[in-house]
Length: 181
Image 1: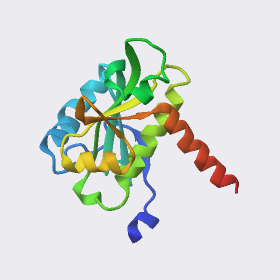
Image 2: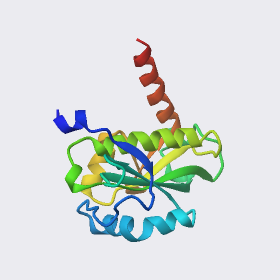
Image 3: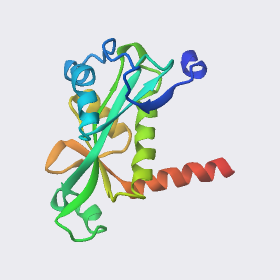
């Protein structure tokens, strides 16, 4: 286990001016450019909400974005679609971007960000309906990450994945059960 992972206390918080976006590099130019130039505007315009994970309040170890989305019911697997109301569109949440700084790889940052996104999606469903979390894998590395975390590829779009909110609920229920034991 990485020793630094045990000693560093990370915080996940909304993107703010105090965060050093210019120093962030995940190795994917489009994601770096998005965080450095576009994320703040998307937050201001209510297009997306960006969250960063930081060890010190300024350094960005990673980030992700969430926004409202809609998914065509016909795009889902039949066994998932049959459990949902027969509306043509399914309310969803889009995990638009998720990236970890090169300097913080191998410390479980991606998993921490994903778990935080799950918590926020679940909490938000109490106020705004969302049946699924949707992600787009930008490359093979991202694809492997989402598959490793049990996301399901959409049959019609192999680089688009989903995770049902019901599955997220079950995940947290099982974690609560283990804490009680």
